[in-house]
Length: 70
Image (cartoon, rainbow, N blue to C red):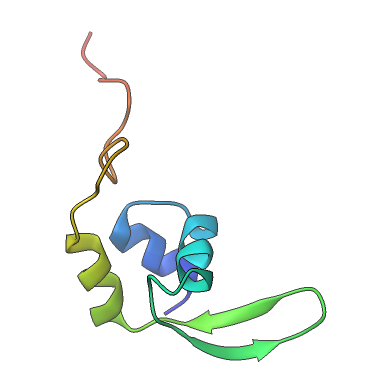
């Protein structure tokens, strides 16, 4: 799966998923790399595992900051 698909499962943006991969907090396989970009393959089980981990601080993953109550 791509970082975009993993981001939907985890509840963050794709750029943060790439950062997690670079920090070795999320394991992924490098599929191809060019001078300007690279593509990762992330296992579904790995994305689900990271989504279940407890955050130490910050806003909860996947939760909007403002409520839509009127």
